[in-house]
Length: 123
Image (cartoon, rainbow, N blue to C red):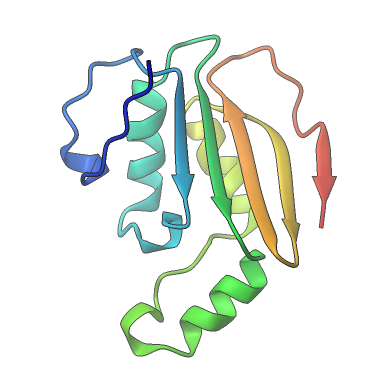
């Protein structure tokens, strides 16, 4: 019962509160409207149980450093942790895990108002 979609998230015609989990893997820096994308994904997630994971196989520092050095992606950056937290909250998501270390980046959030904020923070 898994569906994989490969399409522009802003064009996705998915009903509100119908998705259990969104995994955004190695693509978040490349969204032009990152805050709008977070809101769109949050709207799709089921209240109380929907989960969003944004993951990369490198730290935000290393990803951003790499992108800065290449003209085609020099503006495609992972936002600072404080910005991501604020944007997630604005989108109606509660972050509960944030890892930003060499070789790995993960921020996970639930569409729920009663989750603790950042149970694990390494980085």
